Image 1: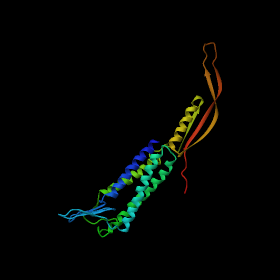
Image 2: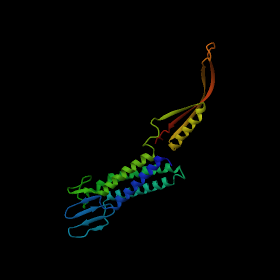
Image 3: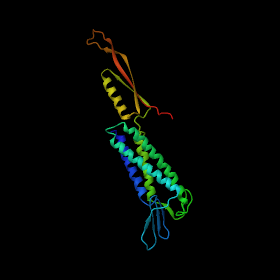
Image 4: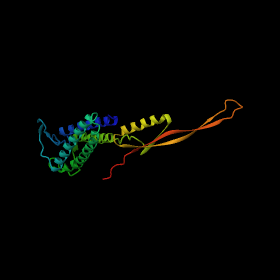
Length: 245
């Protein structure tokens, strides 16, 4: 398996853990007055002074229901991506499917980030869309979710081989002459293999005339030149153009 895909797989797994942890903990929004109220997407906990903490399933507004749906879809996408990357050593072509599934996961996580602050107007919070009231702030669960987005984007960049790029330029030409032809071909094939479908090869051959100049062995002899023909290979390694929608 390509080392960039391996790194992307670990980042994807970490993002999945952050997403599940943020869903399971009731600290997306925290209010601290006359006790404390901790609001999450799946549970709400309230603690009054001198009373034990009580946790119930919250009655979510439409905005937070949409956020919860987007989060669940994102977790499913990340989990499926991790599974596909895990089996990719036996089925390398499956990496292409994993690329687009994690891309879908990134999109739904970003949609969740947009819809979540719109629910700040719910009666339990009493704020406005994208604005929390005084004494109320986002909690650790929200920051876990932010880490999830960051790790998802980083994982996508590595799996898509955007970071780092395979080649610094759009294309490069490898030349091989004589006995170096085999080395040039091997190098081009290695680049194509590392590209995993993102790199193409175009090969041409030619004949090159070489002139060998020989110095005289003795002063009474004259130097001479010999012209010989040698085979050469020219391999153009270039990135596939992105498909136009």
